[in-house]
Image (tube, rainbow, N blue to C red; front, side, top):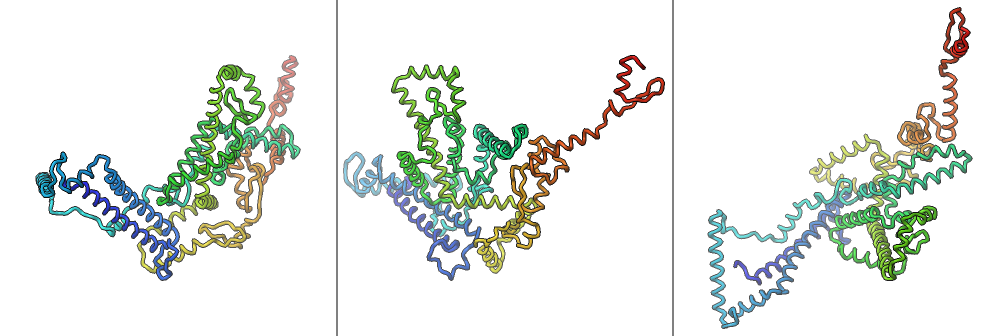
Length: 558
């Protein structure tokens, strides 16, 4: 053998020390480049990165330190396994060095010493023969990387490649598009939301004095397509109390949706904080949940499902209202389930109750974890919402211009020191909070537009369109342009009215209906009618309209 077990132990201890020194140097390098320590001197502030470069470099070095820690843990685990000595190899090795022979006979240190030399020579002789056959040079000693070499290797390793996708922007944004798609396509919740919105809109129209016939026009309304947008979802994805228990209970789709959000938030937190103890964070959340669950303080789950008035125990279902529950209890399926339920013993009924409580606890824990991770990622959520608000306020040309500018900045990273200092100062100014007391819209550069431009375009004027669902348009230009956009066109289609130029500037549903009726009457007056306007001539040269001609012909007077 080439090395004894104790030699492996010594090498593992040395590896732990070298990697520990490399991790310490990486932390010092992070302090120099990113200024993370509170004791950073002001004299070196010129070399500290600013803005997005600082955040990216800090995250990269965090991943480098995490890699060093994983190496240390692997080497330390090897040491623990050797110290554990489950196969007594370490004990035999120490006894061999003390002169003990195999089988317990004899006690001669020198005999064992020369025996070990013979084994080493035999090993290297065989290794030399193998190396000669393979053309390997044994005179080159194996490379042992010192801490500085490990630091240089870490600096050249692209740790962040493939860690975050483009939408996450190096851990600065959340990418919940998959969860959002699952949420808006969950049919039970979508139907419930649409029905509630229709009821509210119908009640509002009836309150204004409109007839039921007009309110009936909304049965194919815009609520089906305009249920919730991505920004609204980002603000409320952690709010589950608005979802009725009847839609949650025994729904595999809802449970899969919750588990998907929890898995993504856990993975995002791990990728954004590689040095955090994720198992400890998860355990802390579990302890908090168990404590609140025991006191029945988990939001939305203070009352078990079995104690709800709309719960049907024989079929293990929850209903939205009393009407569907009564209809269900009159059906054959319920009666059959009731007979089977009465045949169960007391212990079997208790098992069903425990299964129902376990399902409640599973759903409640998933919702609790979503809220817990949302709290520790609050700044990321707010930054994501602000980014999408800002993105919606820009046109396609402005977004292309911004992308082009960012690409140009990436190509100029190797500029001179003076140019780097100027860019760092600009990044520092960008990091400062924007002073916007008048709440002016943001321009393409991310700063508020001038007040004179705000007044020139009339962006302080609010125009509401009832056809668009009381959507607000700021400025005359946006208001006039919206009449040909999808939202207004869909609202007109729901009213069964063509979206023509006659209805421009019409924002009230009642006005649009009255104008449409008037246009239909005018069109009927101008329509060519065959019976009244088509002229016919008999054999005697008398001219008459088509209707009189047909009447005379049927009477045989022609």
